[in-house]
Structures are given as structure tokens and as C-alpha cells.
Length: 170
Image (cartoon, rainbow, N blue to C red; front, side, top):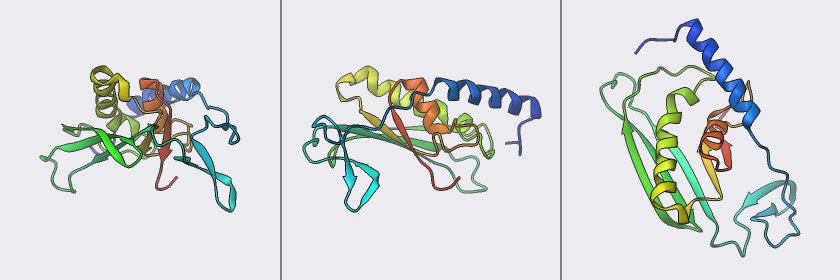
């Protein structure tokens, strides 16, 4: 695996990020007084919201993450994992092994992980559309990205399912 893609490829990726960013739909904040809202205010923290309001135990939530081999283990596959939860019950899980073909390049994570993520979600929505989650939590940033096009935005735009990026840093 090479250290860094050539500048022409990075320019192409940057343009694709701009396109993805332009397709992102940001939903309005929910009306917490509505009984249909899956959100509730975190006790004592009026600016924060959490999923899983009491009374929404039947809501479905998805999660995506990927695990990479340790440095020096390039012959080992990476594994992407997708789960769908109803409350604390796993109602669907799948994983996909794949070979890394791109190095990690800061701000371009989506190009390394998007294909297995989309394949996993599309498989679930094809074979079990009845358990398509209301939202998918994605390990990685969404709008909190230098071009407002983190991996969570890519997953949302490409699958049509709302996403929340869960980034560890920016």
C-alpha cells in the first residue's frame, strides 16, 4: 500500500466530498413535546439530546464500525460490522471482511471505508427492509469535517438513511 495517493486523486476525492456535502439533508431539531419524537433532553443539559426516549422501545437504530489489522499485518483482512438494535436487543448483525487498498489519509477516511459500509446496509435493506433503522450511528465524523463531508455523510447520502457521525476527534 502506498503512503499517499497522488495529488490528482486527492483533487478528485475533494470534489466528490463537495458533491456529497451538497446532497446532505440536515433534519430540523425535533419537537421534544411531540410524542412521536425519539429524542429527549438530557437531564440538566438543555442543549443536548439523546436517542431512546421512553416510549420508543420499538425504534430501530443501526451502527457501523470497522476494524483494521495492526500495523505490519497488511496481509490480514479488515472487517466492517453493522448492527441494528431495537432497544438493547440486536435484531440484525452482519460483517464483511475486505482487503485495504488505500492508506489512511486524514480527511479522506470515507474513500477507504464507504464501500463495505454501503454494501452491508444495502444487503440489510434488501433482505430485511422491515428492520431498516431510523438512524445509523457511524464511527467517524459527519458534518464535523473540513469539507462537511465525513464518512457519516457519505453513508447517509449513499443509503438514504439518516446518520449521526460519532467522531473521536476533529
